[in-house]
Image 1 (tube, rainbow, N blue to C red):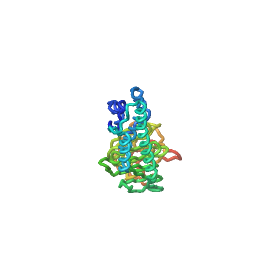
Image 2: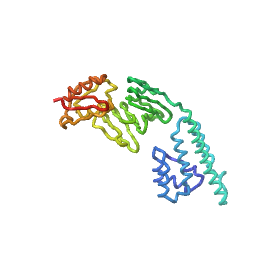
Image 3: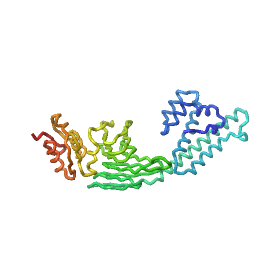
Image 4: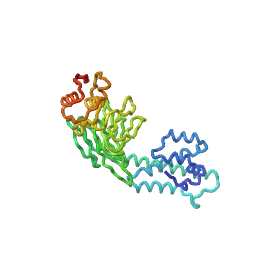
Length: 342
């Protein structure tokens, strides 16, 4: 982000600040610099403390000017107002009287504060008028939905989603489980972001096909194609195709299971491709929301099988898994029990 130093009303210290390399590096980041970062920088460079507050307001005004895009006319008017108030032409220079210089200087600062406040209020009211979004739900069966941007969403049973779109991007608030094929959108020459989030789990879409489970018990992302950035709390990771991550005790961790298995509810087929019994047990716990209990030799857990299983009927799925891996699986009230069949 660059700022025109001609707007500083002749304030040499403020002008020097906006030419300071380390300060320019601070304000160059895409995200708005938070108060803690801002104050930390000024603590390290105390000679600029005198202009700390007005520099902050100038920075915020320029930041909003560069990020708010849905009313270009208003945005230009705001900056024209700032320039008019901070005009340093010969006709508007104060005399050399120190008191008058000080007064003019603070009047310039006040103009900045007024413009920032006006812009902030305008942004608030604009956001307040944005519709709440399109709502979707699925009860006893999965549902295929085309979102307003052309993205295809498959909602698993007992899941809900709310789609929002504004000048900053596209957002899907997802509760339950959903599989998405995201349509790329360009705006002003840049990709319009697509974010899936709910209850702390945030998935920023950098690619196209992925699965999200977001329930009070399970928070998981399984990527089939492209790239996504998964985040939870202060942690985040960029995923590769085939990877699965979940939230374990508040931390994002990769699961030892292929994404294609997790996404089998969407295709209707559990596609086994040299799949270990350990992966199948993880899949069972994710799919049926029950723990799998039992002690099996490590050699059996690592044994691989290939084949396809129709996932429409749980009883058939469990019997097929038992036959392929040579195990017995019984369903109890709150868990599955598994043991060798030989």
